[in-house]
Image (tube, rainbow, N blue to C red; front, side, top):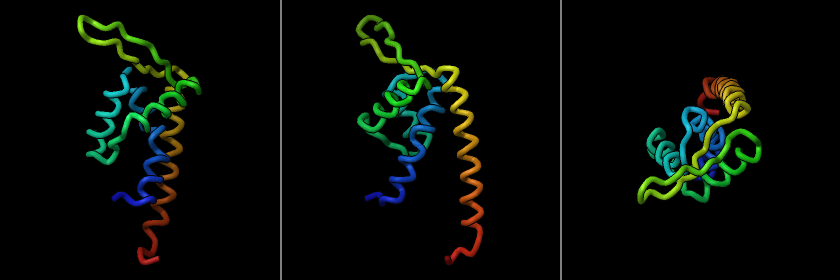
Length: 115
């Protein structure tokens, strides 16, 4: 069973990671779930009930747009998520904030390892 600390860390970065993936290429929900799981070596194995509220929040905030694709043959239409210009700018800003945060935490972790 995963501990609460690890869960909180994941929760804090999921929106940033989802936005980064959508900025990299337009995609749909199932593909996002697969890419998160694969890229993270299984550490970010999410359920749809976790992903979709993040997507809705990003859409409400103007970071992404959702469009329905036209199904081809027997393929059902899919909701495709695409980054807006504001989303691409926010993606870069969040990555900068993360790097600064990571550097600061690492300063503490490089200190006395027993404390």
